[in-house]
Length: 278
Length: 304
Image 1 (cartoon, each protein chain N blue to C red):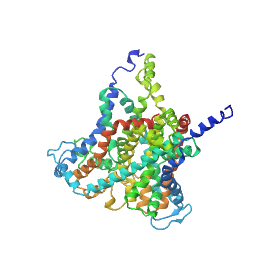
Image 2: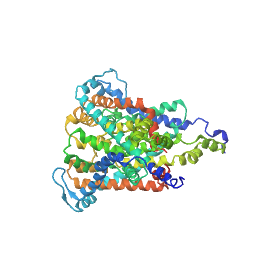
Image 3: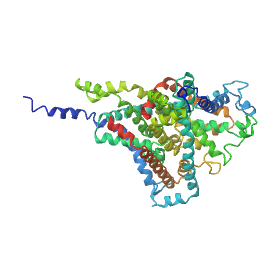
Image 4: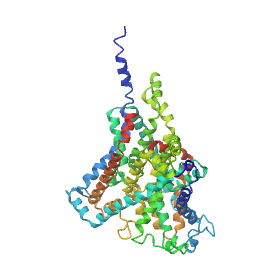
C-alpha cells in the first residue's frame, strides 16, 4: 500500500526513540559511577544516589591514590605493554606466513588459531595453573604475560590475516624482482602497510589484557604483583563502607583505556571491520 | 635456442610464490601450543585424575565424571548456563543488530550516539560488577533513589530477580561491541541495493528483512559465535557481583568450575566441568558454521 516515497527517507521516529532509550541505559550507570566518586563519604549514605553532589570533592581519589594504587597501575601497564608487544610481533609474522605461504603447515596453523576463537579457552585455566606452578612462575607478572600472549593470538591473527590479504600481490612481486628477501618484504612492505590493523589489534588486545581478571585471580596472590581489576575487587573488601573510593578506583582504572580509545577510535573500528565483518 | 628452458621458468616462479618460510610462524605456534592446546588436552587428562591443586595428581578413572553428573549443584549450574546462553542471546542479538543498523546512518547525531554507546567497553568486568553492585544496593542504591516501588527491590538479594539482573548487566557490557560489528557490516552494503529496494517500493521493515539482514549474514554468524562462546565464559562479572548467590541462584558453570577447583580444591571434577564447557562451545561453533552453509574462513583463504 505504501508509496515509493516512504522508502528510506521518512524520519525513523521509533528507531530514534529506541536508540535514545539505549543511550540512557548506557549512560546512567556511568553517570552514577562518576557522580558517586565525587561525593564525600557522608553524602553517599544520605542522598539520592543519582543526585549531583552537594559538595564536590576529589577526596575519594586521594584515598585511593594513598593506597598502593600506583603500584597496581604500574603492574597492569607493564603486563599490557609486554603482552601486546609480543602478541603483535608474533601474530604479524604468523599472519604474513599464513597469507603468503600456501604450504600445509601454514593452512593447518590458520585453522588451529581459528579454533581458538571457537572454543571457550578460559576453560583451560586449571592446566594453565598447573603449568605455571610447574614452571615456578606462580605469583609473578610473567605468569600473567605468557598465557596472556597465547590467548590473544587467535583473534589477533584473524584480524591481521584479513587485513594482510588486501595487500596487492603485485607489490610483493615488484619487491621480489628487486631481489628482496621475505624478511625484507616483511619489514619494508608488510609492516608499514598494516599499520592501521596493528593499531586496531593493539588496542583490542590491550583492552583484554588491561581488563583481565581470571588469570590474575588464579595465577597471582601477593599484593606486589596485583593488577588493577583484581585491586578493584580487593578494594571492595577493604573499603566496604567507602563506596565513593571504590568507584573512584573504577574511574582511575579506565583512564588509560579512555585515552587509547580517544587516540585510536577510528583505527579500532576500521580494524574490527576488517577482522569480523567481511 | 632457449626452447628447453622455457618450461622450467613457471616452475621457478611457482616456487618463489610459496612465500616466506614457516619459521616465522613458529613463535605464535609455540606459544599457542604450550599455553592453549596442551592445556586443552591437559584438562581432559586432569578430568580423569584426583588432584587437590598442590600434590601430585593420581589416576581416578571416571569417578570425577560420575561426581559431576550426580552433583545437584553442577546439574543446576548446567541448567543455569543453558538458560543464560539462550537469554543473553535473545536479548543481545536483536538490540545489537538494531543499534548497528541505526548507527550505520549518516546523520551527525548518530555519530555522537555511537561514541557514547561504546563507553561500557572501557570498563573491566570487575569494574562493571562493582559499580552495578553499588548501584543496586538495597539501602543506598537505586532502590533509595526515587520512591518508585518498582525500583525499590533487593535486586541482587532476591533469587527470583538476580538472574535477570545479570542478563541485563551482561547486555550492558557486550551490546556495544556487537553493535559495532553490525554497524561495520551494514556500512559495507552497497547503497545501490537500497536504491533498488526503494524503487521497488519496499518500506523500511521490508528493506530491513530483504536487504539488510541477508547482507549481514556473515556478521550475524561471527557475532553469534562470539556471543554464545562468550556466554560460556562469563565468569568475572558474575564472580564479582554475586559470587554465585544468593544460594546457588547464579552459580553458572564457569563459576562452578572455579569454585570447585580453586575454592574446594577438587581439580578433577572442576576439570570435568571445563571439558563440558569446551565441548559445548566447540559443538555450537561448528553447528553455527554448518548452518551458515559454507565455511567462511576457508573459502576466504582459498580465494585469497
